[in-house]
Amino acid sequence: MKKQGKKEGRKKQLTSEQYKILKEKGTEPAFTGKYLHNKKKGTYVCAGCGKELFSSEDKFDSGTGWPSFTKPIKKNSIDAKPDHNFGMNRTELLCENCGGHLGHIFDDGPAPTGLRYCVNSAALDFKEKKKIK
Ligand code: FE
Image (tube, rainbow, N blue to C red; front, side):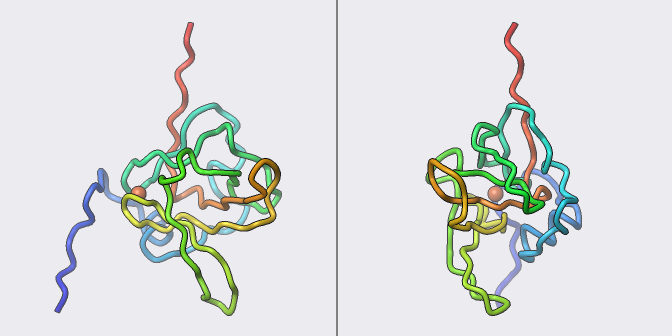
């Protein structure tokens, strides 16, 4: 029997919504996420472990109803793996640090990468960039 251990690096209790997405690979309903229309400058971090994942610089409006990015903040911030659930061929997007499910990666994004990192708002926390006076 495998013991259920606490995930390393978790900094806080997850809400049930965050848990459903990060741990159970759920998807929030389109157009409901709190960061969909967030246009502030800053960094999006993993809601599970705090790892920096995406920059506001790479966010774009994909029209899909989920926050979308052309690339992660660093190449090794994320993991990608094939997802054949629901009879689809998709690429799952995960946090490299805690393995939390973030969303999916699609190849219909804009320049420069042509990729769309489609992320659930509930999998993210946002750190606003402090204004320098
Ligand atoms: Fe994480």
